[in-house]
Length: 238
Image 1 (cartoon, one colour):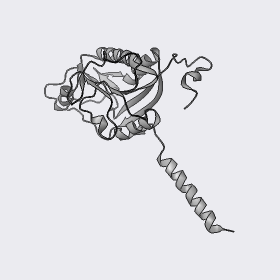
Image 2 (cartoon, rainbow, N blue to C red):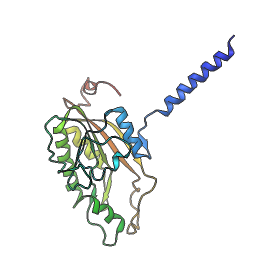
Image 3 (cartoon, rainbow, N blue to C red):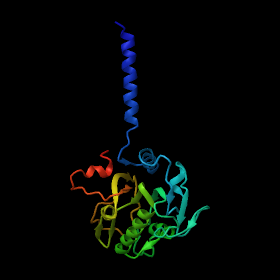
Image 4 (cartoon, rainbow, N blue to C red):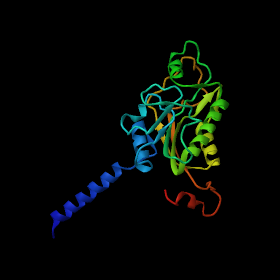
């Protein structure tokens, strides 16, 4: 018997299996760049075509720059001034969108340096109702400009406002589905550390150490989860 050949074959099989395990795309990561690369590998092989809230482009240190870059207050070269709810793009004209919208609600404490740093960089909303209305208008605009079969990547995180829990990702998913998006996937980005304000003395909820990358696909027909054969809307694939 060729025991050496058998051993080498087992080694090769083990190497292939190990490689496959390393390449598994997971739904959770501590690394934002890793999640974005996973999304590109699965859904957007040419990268993201549009970023309507580009800011300074921190997303694109390790992935290709988007073709269309917008921001309501441009801070980088090549970024067009525009509100993400009213973009200068035609109907059904793009294949993919990366959306990382502002989420700051309410006014910061006068001596809160950590929140003012974020607040000075990004837009603020007076309350959660105004924030959710902004999300709705943005989703409608993205549905307009995306081609059928196109992808929207929506980064978001849940919030506590005035002592009340707001599951923003649920609100976003429900509204997106209602206008014709299919929630194809979800990735969870876990933070190793969070800035805790000195005014937060009494903890009433779990501290949020995660955010979401929601992956939506624009379908020709709305997804009906309770109709027989609804898998036709998604191609019946995982």
